Structures are given as C-alpha cells and as structure tokens.
Amino acid sequence: MSKGQGFIEGESFAFTSGVYGDRPTFVLTRNRVDDRAEITLYELAPKEIATARQERLDQVHKSTQVTTVELSEAIVDGETPADLDGDNLGHDWADWCAIKIATLRGKRFNEVSYLIQSTLREAGLEPETVCTGAPASLSLPEAAGVRLSIAFRAMKHVQRRDRLRAIADGISQMSLGECYYWHAKARSPTSPNGVKALRTLLADHIE
Image 1 (tube, helix red, strand yellow):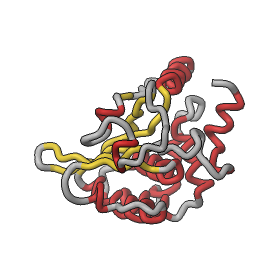
Image 2 (cartoon, helix red, strand yellow):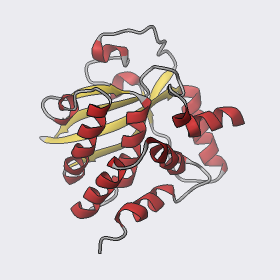
Image 3 (spheres, helix red, strand yellow):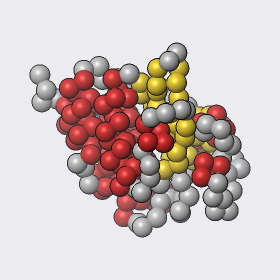
C-alpha cells in the first residue's frame, strides 16, 4: 500500500465516506455455540489489503496474525454483504474477505451489548438483529464498525465486569475522530501497545 493510501486508511474520519466509498466495511455476526451466545466483528477488505497488513506485521516481527475467512463464512445465511438486506448496490465483492477482529461471549458479550445498541441506533440500524434471537449477521458502515472494533479489541482479554463496563462506557463517549485515532493505533505494526494503552486510559483507574 502506498503512503497516500495509508494516510487515507488512518485518517478517513475526515471524509464524508469511508475508505471504500459507500459500501459496508464491517459485519457483525451473532451465533450460538454450546447454547451460549457469542458475537464476532469482522472487517471487510480486499484480500490484497489483508495480505499487505500481514506482511507489514511480519516486517516488524510482530506475532499478531491477520485472521481472514471467506465472506460466506462470516455471514449467516448469506454469501456477500449484499445478501444481508437484499439490496445489491452493485458492489463487486469478488476477491474480498472478512478479517476477524474478535469474538466476545459470556460477560464480555453482555457488557458490549449496550455499546452495540447505541452505536447501531445512531447508524439507523436495528440492534435487535444481532443482540437477541437466532443467529444473524448485520453489515455496518465504517464509522459504526470502527467504534465497535476498538471495543472488541480492548475487551477480548479483560476478565472483570467493572473494567469491561468502563471500557464500553468510555468508548461510547468518544468522538468519531478519537475512535479512528485508537483504531489506527490498535492495528498499527509500529504501535505494539495501542490496545493496552486504550485499556489503561479507560479502565486503569479501577482498583
């Protein structure tokens, strides 16, 4: 990816549309495993972009892996994001993949649900689609996905419920610009402690 493309990817909150125009760039999928609900957030990207991210991580010897799956594996009862609402806007999803950000279950799912609900309602979406009921998927615009992505990354290794709640509450109060800043920090190959720094900012005051 060129330097200019990297700037756009990190600073796209300054524009009215996302990096890839008006196409959905995240998918949120709710499943049940062993009678327990879990929710997974995926970022959608061209396969070449996912490969380039892994190469950058490898260059700086980071152990982080970019985990990708086919779109059909990330979406319940669908093959592409266009299948989620039956509205094909003409986007070509060939050679795209879903990059797994994190799966939350149990108390982590419970504590992130409040943030999911407020974020989706702000985006004009129905949170009940993925927060309750049968397994389902929902495509998200970039702004909503970015806010949830930093929450999923920050919460996935936290055990204490009060810290989980503090992280969700803190992210819910962030401006969109702050969310993009932490989103870039969390996945940057040159910023190894981005997620840890976010956890410290939001929950380190809890003894």
